[in-house]
Each structure stands twice: as C-alpha cells, then as structure tokens.
Image (cartoon, one colour):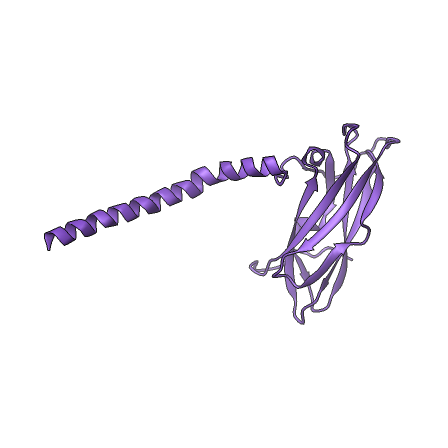
Length: 185
C-alpha cells in the first residue's frame, strides 16, 4: 500500500507541475508570441491612431483609394456591409464612410465590431475620429441601421502607398450586462 501511495503522490506532483507550467505558458509566453504574430501579420492595430477631431489644415491634392470590407462571425445572424465599396479620399481631409447592419433574427441581438487596416504599412497613417466599433451595438429584431466611420489619412503617408483596405468583422456580444448607447442612425 505504501508503494501505491508513493506513486499517487508522485503522479499528483507531476500533474500539479503540468498545471503550473500551462498557467505560466499562458500568462508569460503566449502574450509576447501573440504580439509578435500580430505585428508580422498586420493584425496588431496598435499603430492605428484614434483622435478626437479631424485635421484642420488644407487637404493635399493627392488622393488615396480606400476600400471597405465587412464580414460577420457565423454566430451573428446580421446582414452587414459597407454602403460604398471604395472611395478616393484626399490625403489630410476628413472623410465619412457608412456601413449598414440588419438583424435577421426575431429577437434583439448585440454585436461588437473589430477592425483591421491593410496593408500593415498603411495602417499607421489611417486615423479614425469616430467609429461604431468603439461601442457595443444592439439591434432589435429586423432592425436596419446605418453606422458611420469618420476618418482621415495622415498627410505624411509615403508616396508608394496608393490604397488601403478598412475591414470590419462583427461578433455576437450577448455577454455584457447592459448595452452601450447605440450609434444614432
């Protein structure tokens, strides 16, 4: 019986060691790896600036083509997309793009959007002033809503960047206690 108890004790220590190692890996190793992965793939949006107001100087003669893309996560039964698929925006000038969302369910559904700007080299020059992605959106059953994005492209954008894509993905977000104030139509 002592041999079995000793083996059980060693097994318990090994299992505890594995649990501690998994915790350490998840807390200390994964975040830097994830940050590196996002930096390489352009998923890291830390370089995208958000400001309170658009620039006040004159816009440049140069324009940048902005493409707009939208998807929804499979768990969210919304029709979601841009009203315009692209526009030419003068560098340094404030611009507005509209997206729409329509709840296809017979009950209210909450969603939250994430965004990405590509190519990654262009992301740091894309500045969002106001966006629906900053708050949780609740659409009533069958509700249709247009949601604006206000932005500008920084004047110091390199000449070799001629276009960029703003992509949004909406995810279901029913885990929040109370919805934020929805964006007015």
